[in-house]
Length: 285
Ligand SMILES: [Zn+2]
Ligand SMILES: [Zn+2]
Image (cartoon, rainbow, N blue to C red; front, side):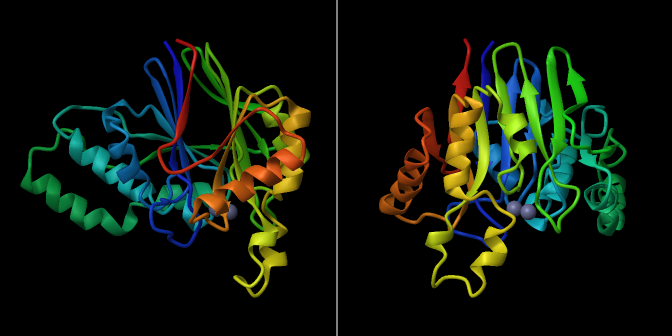
């Protein structure tokens, strides 16, 4: 059974045509795990042909809005689409702190609307609330959850002042997949990426922000500088680097090539994708 990695969104907090908010779907056999739920994540999951009833769990990297705005959408539409079956609440894993608080409260505003639907139709599932699993993030790589032979580990990354922010490392029978979340290049990210078959990493090209942002240094300080990222991926032995959360979002082929050129110049010579939404990788057979 192959492991598939699908980028459900390559965007940033601000909408860019064609780029949904950040998210990655990792599937292995019966296990389907979504990492982050940004703007339009649910739409992209649908467009990829994914059946929401197959979603095993959802993991949050940090509480920035672009990584959580789609959570209520995922929860609500999952509930509505499979309401004739009795299924457990969706497990949502989040680092203890604001992300877990938001996940706990994300459906509060919809309480009365949910009650109205339940009264109107024969809903076998009582509500779309998440089953929130909080975990304490540390600077060590620690196991967060297991699903059969799929193991999800996590560690703190550096996205200050947004703390805690974590990345994930998913080990299946076929592959190791790293998901950076949002972070500058740091020891935690490199540990997650060590010998990973696929690393889905956020990236910033500071040189591409000149004239676009008034304060590019502030943004660049808590994202993954492209030169440092390419060097890190080479050191860590990453097999396939998938660039996402692209800052600034490339609009032309030349824009995308600039990301490629910078990563290559930094010494990474593995497989490389400057991802568009729904790009992905299949590992194993
Ligand atoms: Zn962020
Ligand atoms: Zn972000």
